[in-house]
Length: 114
Image (tube, rainbow, N blue to C red; front, side, top):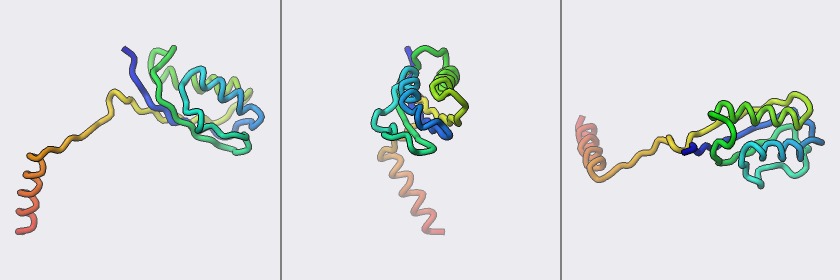
């Protein structure tokens, strides 16, 4: 079973003329939201996000490295690539029920009495 991740990637200092190639190369590695990509490549920085499973790499670290290398190749030179990943199978969640509410009310009453 593969693990789902959400990636948020910011690329800066890229060649605006290579934006389409960067987009294509990145999409070969990860499923990014199509509407996140800039239209014209005139900016010096863009941020895209996407949710996917690791496709060809052994780990998220390897996938991010593969993604970065693909972007550098498509750009034909160095550009800064910053990636944040979130393991969607291990996202912390919290559930509070009526017992928690009752405990809160008791704590609140004691706190207000002090």
